[in-house]
Length: 119
Length: 355
Ligand code: FES
Image (tube, rainbow over all chains, first blue to last red; front, side, top):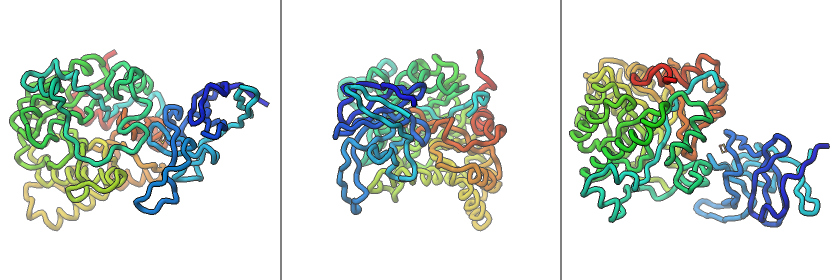
């Protein structure tokens, strides 16, 4: 089993993200407001943008009626720096506009202060 | 895009910050920027609902200046990274002198200042970059003078006309085309803020952005039926940032209309689709996600693979990556779309850059 410390828990505040490396693989470590950590491939599945240059934000929900905005999932949505596609961090990195597509993810666990990605 | 295929990128947006124009502006116009905080008029109710507005969020200059405003950063992030052979600068439409509704004297001064800045800071500094002559086309005669003044620069390849609310095929503007043709310049048309909803703006940006191709279609129709390409047989026009999937529809529609209603436009001597094939080019960006089969079927419907030219639109948010935006095409076709079509279109672009 391959595993690697990619950062420390204190490196990322809730609602933030950073890039790191898992071997040669450029990865994106996201931390949601509940304190959980997630690891994805740091490359958008559309045209390959570096996702760490995008933003973590909320969603304007899929429950909305025409003309209504309900801002929700704050800190749980990753938006690409180029075309702005939205990916749900807590739902396997699935794309909001097309949940069949997702950003490939990696296993992650925390030991003491270490954030470890493993296969 | 494999490395061995050279690229002419037909849409790169360099951006000026108004303060940089001061050294190229005379009074009284300088004062209006320096002390009176003049900014280009804007009309739309929304911004671009992306991560960082009009630009790629990762294209902001590290020192905080806006995307597209620094040559060294553009070289690093785009030209060197992708390996461009050539790139055509198309401005950031801010300022966009031809879009101003009035105060044409200021527009004329801005166009000249912008051209001088562009030559100085970009065209003379990177051999790969070619430029667009900015004009204040509402003042036709001043626009012609500006084309005469800077159009002879070896790296100016086109005259830029924004798509807003003026239809450029009107005979009033023909002297601009005459001057462009005289200097081997093509016409580049790029939308600024066309009111695509019956002269107004839709509720949502997503509607406006979806309908941009309609603004491009209007200009192509207008230029062709007004006989611009009959009158100026060596003139070409490239439609920048409107995409290309509407081309077959336009060809069929205009040809059918021509067969029925030629009586009204007797100066048009050829089928509109033939005029398009010979004179009009379209940038691929922003490309829809087509698979190879659909892409090839479109090419077949156009009846030519020489009308479309690749563009990135760097540094805008709807940037198309040369590696990922189009399906994996056969090498010969790829070479046409990424390089030859644009190269053959612009008479002033050399075969390869001097090394
Ligand atoms: S590259 Fe991420 S949305 Fe297009």
